[in-house]
Image 1 (cartoon, helix red, strand yellow):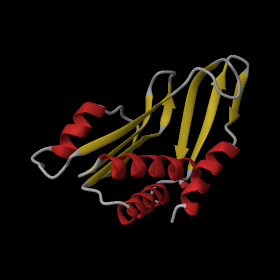
Image 2 (tube, helix red, strand yellow):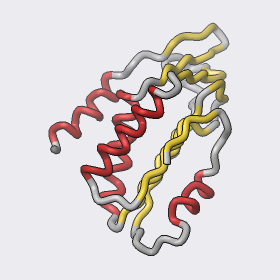
Image 3 (cartoon, helix red, strand yellow):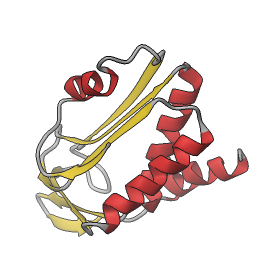
Length: 151
């Protein structure tokens, strides 16, 4: 299940939906990303996320499909918000269900690493002194590249 949306999400409710009626799931690993009040500047007051509809969902589906091929998973839910968000607001939710914890942990990390580097989202941070587009981080690229070494 993949969604790109403006509305907030409920991580607990999403996990219940993923696992409802399932007895083959032994582990669910989740990641919830939140808007920080600092980044390239120390006074972030808002974050605007933009995307390319259709292309973004396809990129997220491709990333999820890659994870499903690499690990034995019972399900994945991926929700990413767009629009103007405030510090503390949730941005992204990744839920990975598997029979075993290691597959769930690894797949969740993989999905986030590839989402950060391969999904077409653009972030603009707003501060008291102006706004700017967030640049790609070398650390995010290194995190994604580590999975190529583990194939």
